[in-house]
Amino acid sequence: EPEVTQTPSHQVTQMGQEVILRCVPISNHLYFYWYRQILGQKVEFLVSFYNNEISEKSEIFDDQFSVERPDGSNFTLKIRSTKLEDSAMYFCASSEAPEGGYTFGSGTRLTVV
Amino acid sequence: EDQVTQSPEALRLQEGESSSLNCSYTVSGLRGLFWYRQDPGKGPEFLFTLYSAGEEKEKERLKATLTKKESFLHITAPKPEDSATYLCAVQARRAGSYQLTFGKGTKLSVIP
Image (tube, each protein chain N blue to C red):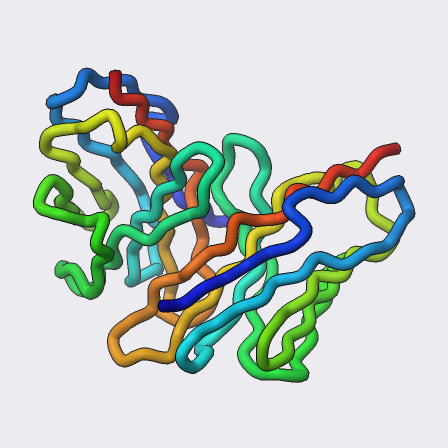
């Protein structure tokens, strides 16, 4: 069964450093998403991406965040200057259409120290 | 603002003991309601999408139903491998918006 692949599975970074989280969506999917889950809290929407541009973003997705599809297979989330409160599981997801269920990856656990 | 409330927060069942999980939602027009399963340290795994009141979907021991205000996930004769956190999410019918709003989940433990 096709999978969404995320790397790394765990990243530890110092406060103020830049991090890039990487995702390989399912190959025939056109819509890509990032969500995050702070420990013990709800899964929260960050951003959706279609046709090489952001189609929707939440209030969480401020100027410290950016997304990119640098080539035909990868989808990345960059956090420019990490804060302690950015520590969370970050999930990438993809879908064939914006309605209907997404396929999520296994996540990247980001720990900011 | 879209809201999703799931109950109970945690549920312990004996193997074979059927039960239901509840998802209450408030949304300005529902495009779809989603059920996901999440194992510890993993991403949500898609189970069902429901689009309109009265709709039902089934998969093995799981059956999801939808009304205008809530959804139920019925688990019939659960097995230990059904232990997981079950997440409910809604997608509102708003132009250009397809984000999912999740509840906090119900953590299900099935005891052999």
